[in-house]
Image (cartoon, rainbow, N blue to C red; front, top):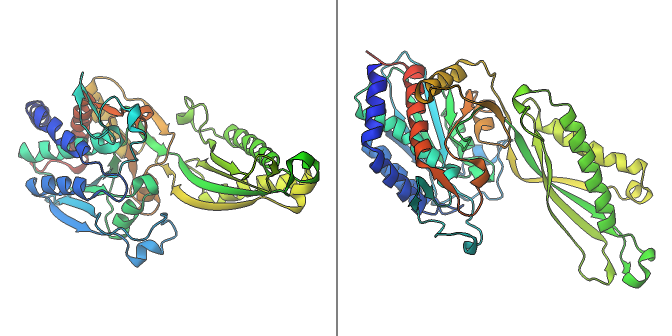
Length: 421
């Protein structure tokens, strides 16, 4: 109880300093390929905390050749991964604290009420791209560690803090850290869950479907085969598949999610001239993967769905749409809701918030799938921030939630790693 009191008091006394640190981090716009300056701020903080640092540029052969590796590039020069370790005295469980430093582009700046990288503080909210996804969560991790260190609390188990790149593009940074040997007895990823606990995470994959037609003059369109019209049949079939797949979901943690594993059509393009029948249409989208599913099985299910079109459409029976799996891939995570790590975080949540946490399954992918499936590390996703504003203009995070999450995570660390008395 004395240790918990020290944590709470330290966080209260150092609130202004923590806010300034978050502002600095948000003000460094760490979009993909521009993470180095924000990582420098993380490195500076880790050194002040006395953590043992490992800083390296990813891109090693073992990463690029790994079956889970997913990225449209292989050169990550100048934007390192950062790992900081606080060694325990021994005999306790280790914990891995994983945050990503990369943020999505800011979009149209005209849609923002302030500069997207201002770090503006107003009415208890801090605004800026990456504030919710997920620099606020990363600061919660750092504040939790700093509170423990500055309170003079010695732990038995190790803390492994990670600030990785490439999460928004498929998780190459976390995969590189796992392959470098960074695993633990448990892990917390503070993505913006709105302070809910996610023991299970949806995975996802991007797909590209190419639909062929036959060109003709628009005035005699009946002499051609319109690829857009055939693509409409494909989209209808994908909608049927989405309904069929979601009817099979029985996981109770998805009971409040309208579509647990969506199939989203995110992009479609076709044709070059209004008076011509297009001979090609390309559909790009994303398919969700349930926590208990395998990626290859889901791929096969979508491909078989398209094969069914050959039974109802003569043209498509001779010109079957082709599927390409490209771009982003996020492995699903599937931790038992009764796992000891869940119990630990739940207890800490109840101590801080004086109420029980909401426990659900994540509606989106995280690096948790890589940590659990490749690194054999149990993962709970829990953090401050609201998902709805994560990639939107005027992204913000509640300062109160950042500090509440920091306290919850700090108490969970004390319990999980054990205090050396």
